[in-house]
Length: 596
Image 1: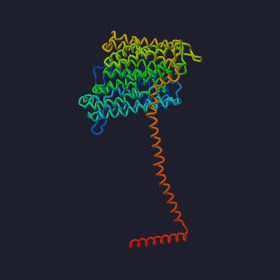
Image 2: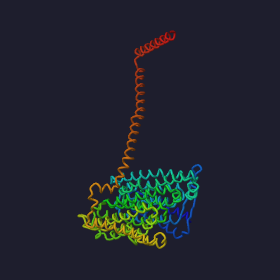
Image 3: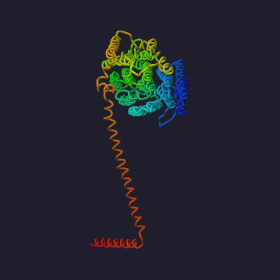
Image 4: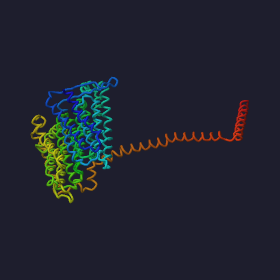
């Protein structure tokens, strides 16, 4: 039964998504119905599987063979997979419902809704897969869907560029991911995850470390870890519901989940865990600092996602898998809520910029309350969800003081930029020409639904697993830093002014991620383009030129000979006699030279 439900869990959004691709692009009602039905059916299947859950279940069916390697249609269902699938499907339902009103008037709604369904099915494939190749298929389908969804609004020139950037940057990491899978399969003789993990202890340390580092390259790309994080803020060019989907429960969560799923491999490589910790520390600080200066409300939240993913990876680097997944679940709730609230702000104001917002709480009370809940959960204000999960993460980092200190600094920065966002958007005077109003019911309902887990998920989880968080004296320092960050944010923006935006070029430099895009452009993009230009020149002027030149010379020679063949009889006869005379002279000359 578990195997059948797993097929239904993935198959419902996949099948309905494929059907949706066949609809006319403007067929909004049917496309919306298919999209919501696919996500809702999957959510119902997950709920049923949770009710029936008695323990981990693995089912395997042979699929295709590559030589001695067997790829199987294998599912590996445990409580972690089911909870992750629940988060994915709930967010997907909210995004599909929210999109009905947010993309009202969109001329390409049918492919949009269908691509969300396929995206959801791909993430669920990653979550439930018990085979590395099947996992890779879901992993890559997510990448393709993210490209299509980020570039959905073709009227925005930055959307196609952002989509291409996301696709290429994540592909860089995916090359390593594929090589890591191949290496593990060659060394263990299987693609099945349970078999690979059982044989990890039989592998030499070099193989384990190389495989783990190669997999980390793919994880860094998907989960936006330094230095492959630069695509995520630019992905905000896509529709806001897609930002919620990507940032909350699908693509960026995939990397965290894969490390948790394959943690036995990473645990066997101290080098890989150290690299993961360093990468996480840089990521969480860089993302938090960039968020303090961004003016675009979606980019603030995007950089926040980068930072929070750093917290999850930091916990994983310390072996605190449950703490990392706990924060992944709470983050899925409050970050999806925050992005959808941001969509409501943009819908009302007509701009993404915080500098063009203000005083919106009076005309948008529901959005104000729900976004306050989301920001409070992000900051870690007790008893909201993020308080419990973030404390679990921070508590797991004590054995590495440098990583623990980075997490504490990140706490203060998170409180700062969250307070800044709240004050600039909802307080102060309302800009001229802005008429704040709540969105339609289809956009309000997901806000209320997501506010419930954003507020109460952490406390509920603490009641069930109180071993994850220890509410003792160690909380004083994180809570003190949270209060300090809140105070700094309030002092800087209480008069609806933002000193960061008045720092000239320094503000955009910080908001842009400290120029890492420029570094990557000069170290990677410019050299690759130069090589491509040189190769193209060699191909066009060299190879093609030689071929075309040889062809032209042959045609010219042929034309000359043809002209001689068409010569008049007296001239042709003279030419033959002349040639015969030349041959006779040459023969006599060679004979004399030979005698001599």
